[in-house]
Amino acid sequence: MQHCIFISVFRYSPWRIVDDCGGAFTMGAIGGGIFQAIKGFRNSPVVSQTI
Image (cartoon, rainbow, N blue to C red; front, side, top):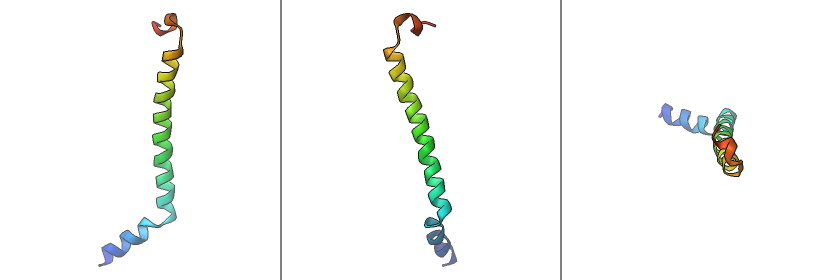
């Protein structure tokens, strides 16, 4: 019974919101970096792609 109370309190704590924001930022940074890299490679001149 005590374990269930801990989970329900932890689920709504402010630190959980901060953890979720950190995870979302990380996923966005990695995903955005991959997207921008692909977009940049597609739009770059042919000579710079070989370097």
